[in-house]
Image (cartoon, rainbow, N blue to C red; front, side, top):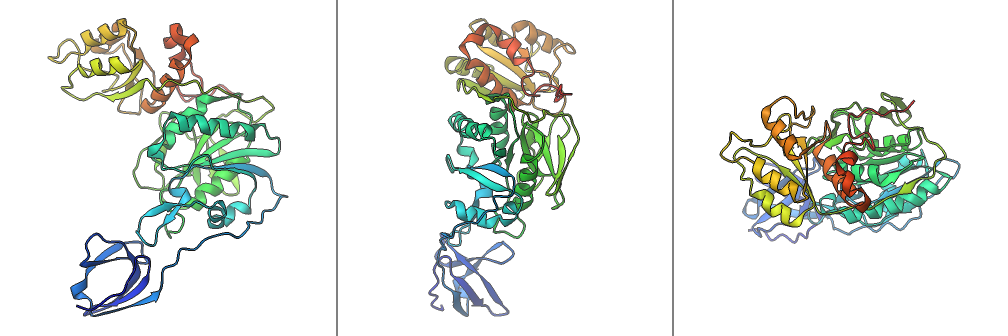
Length: 422
């Protein structure tokens, strides 16, 4: 067997019996395999016994970016908040995976087009984590971080870069936490890190910047409208969901149209919106974590409610169809258990796991039973939106006797997706 003095991160050339292969060595748990990342982005494993010869073309050395970024202060100013996720990550040459970019200058060097559009007056990095690790505490910290940017008259809008997996939860939380909004708050993402040829990050950031400069004072999520690098959509923060695990257009509006088609150089509005103005934004971050989201499935034992009732103040059910769980005709009827816990003070809300469409308690007898038991039917509200809103409502002690009215109050376009703006 040929002796190979390769280290993770080295760029190497390997000769096999019929061809030569170039790639970057990445860490492998199997010491008998050389794992390479090819220029195409794919990884391949080559048994060492099949290698006839190999040499290092370039030794690995992690580059540190310490150059000062020069901005054009004649351009309109925005605020930028970096939270982590793929959009703030790059491929690790030693592991083949992605790692967070820890240097703000390095982040901006990857996105030079952004600096041709705006002057970033203020940059905040409140935390750098992947979005699946977020909790309500991170949403609260974000809202408090955004508020000074909203109060700065020079800043036209705010961009938040964020991981995709729970981005729609954050968009909902900010929609409720920040009231009397006076300028755009735009959350954006990427599905592939910027150092990959197929990255969607640049277009998303450019379109986010264009939307941040627009007249639309909403909490929005901006991302690819299709699988091509053509334009983005701006989605209302309470009516959007991640509907694909890997496509560029992972996010789609549900039960509402996108607010706008967004290009790097223009915005074409599709819906009415709140216009920017001189209102004084207020941050209300009262929130209860004693809420849960439960997906109903056939034959599910209602005793699961006993567990949640011990620990939680409220639950959101993802029911079937128009908003159903097992009724009186079932061996596993949920009706008696729900009645008992609702009578004891548990708040139970109903959404639909179909996502599109709305719940309706007046079509089938099971739903009428649930309504009579005290279940709150939430129209066409998305389950994730309902989950965050319920935590927000229950976080306000003074709203305790008005929970149903508050859950059915259209606070941020979460019901119907129709915004009553002139």
